[in-house]
Figure (cartoon, rainbow, N blue to C red):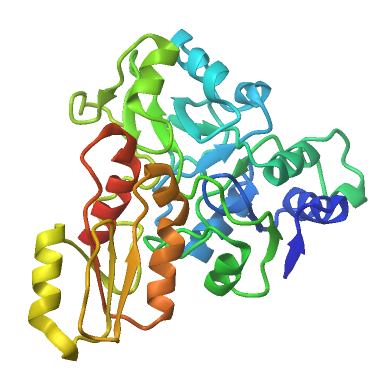
Length: 338
């Protein structure tokens, strides 16, 4: 069931469901999440079951504002606080040392927790309603201080960026709030803050340069500090994959391959910035924007549209090897590895 997320009654229904231990499809500025009470191991178990996700693969906990950190984390290093001040609410997840006995299932049993404050107005309204005081029956249960909310799709597949994507993926029985298409379009940047310096675990809309400027420390790559790296969402080698096979090819190779296939080419889609041509009317060619943010915003929807068209192969021109494109490049490389 999809409800209009801009309506107070829809927000109240979602908060009541979450406070009673149910799952809800929740819009954020990055992608749509499959939300549950992060402090309830039983509720979180439903997320793992619905997604087919391994229970040791940690989930990100979403909070209404920075005050929510105290419910889940033992400490906040000074550089992490600087990142909170600069980028929350927004598409940044911070890995912090977890309070003992809190969100054990959501964190996959690790002694760290990933926390984020989303910028989407519907997500913010739901988080505030979940944390409202009281435990009257009409509220659904006691306050919920944070929502575990991985992307609302089957594990390893393409993340949803519209309410319809969620419904198609997880079925009509799930309550989904429609908050419109996601404005960012790829998952949050993840920074590990548990080892004394910021370590970038997953690139996203917030770049390395922005992180360094905000906290005064250049973030390390996980390869530069491999010891004791926490497991984090979306960091498996193969991830974000459509049903069709993704292959990365430069523009010259793409045009050569299209020429070789000729008019008989079929079941093929191409996503590229370069102007390409095919003699086959059965080849779908979609132009990739020249801007990294615009590409991120449409990337997952484009991959889903290719699947919907029944293609078997998706050829993609690799994004530029520049900092602005790191998040998009990461998602495409993982999709191609599947």
